[in-house]
Amino acid sequence: MLDLRRIREDPEPARAALARRGAADALDQLLRLDERRRELLPEVEERRARQNRASDRIAEAKRAGDDAEPLIAEMRQVSGELKGLEGELSGVESERARLLSTLPNLPEPEAPDGDTEEDAVTLREVGERPEFTFETRDHLELGLANGWIEMEKAGEASGSRFAYLLGDLVLVELSLLRFAHDVAGSEGLTPVVPPVLVRERALFGTGFLPAEREMIYEVPRDELFLVGTSEVSLAALHAGEILVGDSLPRRYAGFSTCFRRESGAAGRDTRGIFRVHQFDKVEMFSFVRPEDSAAEHERLLGIQERILQALELPYRVVDIAVGDLGASAARKFDCEAWIPSQSRYREVTSCSNTTDYQARRLDCRYRPDPDAQPIHVHTLNATAVAVPRILIALIENGQRADGSVELPRALRDAGAPAAIGGD
Image 1 (cartoon, rainbow, N blue to C red):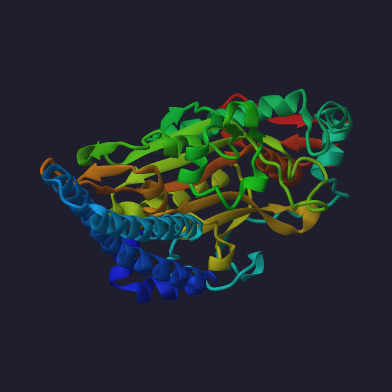
Image 2 (tube, rainbow, N blue to C red; image 1 turned 60 degrees about the vertical axis):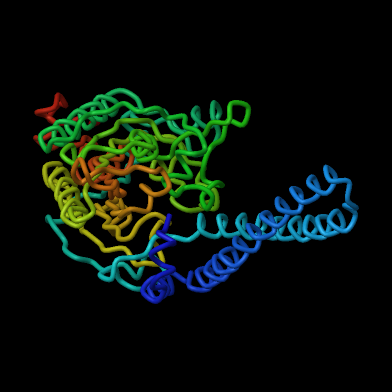
C-alpha cells in the first residue's frame, strides 16, 4: 500500500511513477476523494458539536420550564445535516480505501518502460547452450519414455494440468530441494516450512488481493486460501509486529507446495509440467531496513544465479518492464533458463523488491533505535527453485542420445545419481 500522507504532500513524483504503470488517473481520483474527506471531517465534527450543545440546551430549558420546541427543531435540522454528511463521509472513505488498495507500487526509476514480456531488458546471458548431435526430445517425451511423468492418470484423478512424478525424477526433486536449502542456509537464510492455507489478510497484505483473486484457490467454508507461493506465508510471519532494528535483516527460505488456478492461461504451455496447478518451490524472503533493500535485491539475485550456475544451466537475467510487474513489485529481475525443445529462454525464477508496499499492508515495522518512532520495513522475495521448471531445464539440457539424463555435480553431492533413465 502506498504512503498516502507522503503522496498528499508532494503528489507529482507518485503521479509520474504511476503513469508508467497506467495508474495516474486512479491516483488523481484517490487524491480527490482524500481532499473531500478532509473537507467533510471538520463539517461532521462541527455538526456533532452543535448537536451536543443543542441537546444540553434542551435539557436546561426543560429543567427551567421554558419552551424547548425551537431548540428541538434546531437539533432536528442539525441531526439531518449530520446524517447526510456522515453518509457521504462513509461513502468517500470506503471508496478511498478501495482505490488505495488497488493502486500498485511505485516502480523504481531504473525499471524499464513497457507493458509486456517482450519489453524486458536482457542484462546478461550466462553459460553455453548445449549443441546436440542427435535428435532431441522434450521433457515430456523423456519423462514418458523413462516412466518419470504420468499425465493421463493425473488428469483422471485431478483434472488437467496435474501430474504424477515418479521414480528417479522424484529423487532428483528431493536432491534439488536439499541443494537449494543448503545454498540458502550458507547465505544465512533460516529454513521454514510455512502454512499453505492462509486467511484473506495475508493475501491482501502481500498485494495478491484484490487483483489476483481469480488465480487463487479458495476454501470458502473455512475462509481460507491456498497459497500460490510461500511468499504470502513468509510475509505474514511478522505481520503486525514492531521489530528491533538490530534484528534486521531477517532472511528466510520457505519450502511449500504451491497452488495456482492459472485462470486465463488456457492454451499456453499446457504440454507436460511447465504450467501446472500444483508444484513445489523454495522461496527466499527478506525483511530489511529501507536503505538496504536495493543491495538486498542484488544479493538475492546473486543467490539465484549461484544456484543456476551450480546446476550447469544456461540462463539469462532480464529486468522486467514496469507494465509487467506484479502489483507489489517496484522492480523485478527474472532468471530464464534455456529450454532446448522451445529454442528459447523461459522464466524459472523471479526476484522482486516490494519496498514498503507489503509492509504497510501488513503493518510490519521496526525501531531504528529504542527511542525512535517505528517505521515500515522493506520486504523482498526471490525464488530459489521452482521444481517443475528447473526439472524441465535439467532434463532437456542434460539429455543424452540413449534417452538418459546426466545430472550436475551439485545434485550428485546432494544425493542424486550421476545420471537417470536411458533405453
